Image 1 (tube, rainbow, N blue to C red):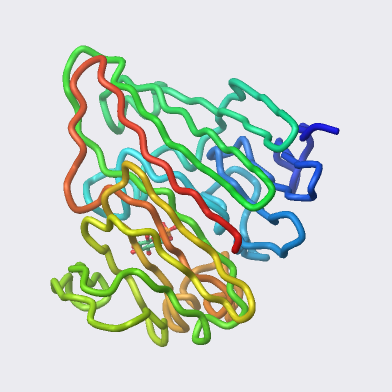
Image 2 (cartoon, rainbow, N blue to C red):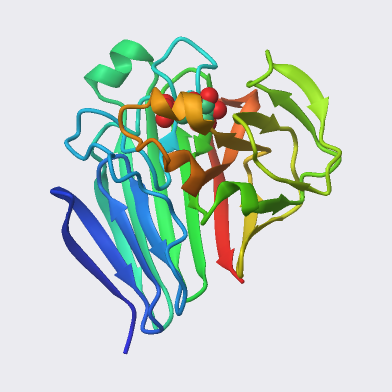
Length: 282
Ligand SMILES: O=P(O)(O)OC[C@H]1O[C@@H](O)[C@H](O)[C@@H](O)[C@@H]1O
């Protein structure tokens, strides 16, 4: 038996379902090239998808792994978190073997993106699953004649049983910009990060793998290419302001994002850049 890739609808939007013979499964929406669900073999769902997420193409889907490009958050004049999470992507390559399934989705500039951000680019998101592993790779090429600069993120919403009981390890000693406290620059001194209030941090130059402990289960988080890690939880008050989140949604999610946020990435004409986040169920 080999792994499989099936095209179907998910909340009425076209999606791909990747499965390994061992029982791992991921759902990838063509809207935004967004992974919406991931269950490793023998495990339980690791991605948070809001039960109130909108799937009608009118706005970004709240949950899963939104792709933020060419702007992370509000670091510029473009719409928050960029232009590509709210557009349909095309299916490029799909491949499977005995123990993996892989799909590549592509997009490039169009009239609307060019009006907002006058650059020519092509972007690819490759999603690969193995039994215990989910890899998401974002690649961008400058297909124009002039250089451009961007910020970006894989805005991963992890599902946790109770956020106050989850521990994120590996950020000790790192400097971060605290967007929940007037963008003050601070240094993490705790053994582990436990979220007990609104949290919106950009950790700089994180080279180490991270470990998320969520009760009896743990998740390894590896990043290549993206220099920064963003940790976000809106907590009660901000969550109440999000129309696509239930009131208690913040308790069951923790965003741990692979990001290029502190410094913009510069790409000359014809140049490519890629970054990858890998989640490993332990
Ligand atoms: O509501 P959005 O556009 O999906 O953004 C969610 C959050 O994304 C986070 O990554 C940002 O750091 C937050 O500031 C932001 O609020």
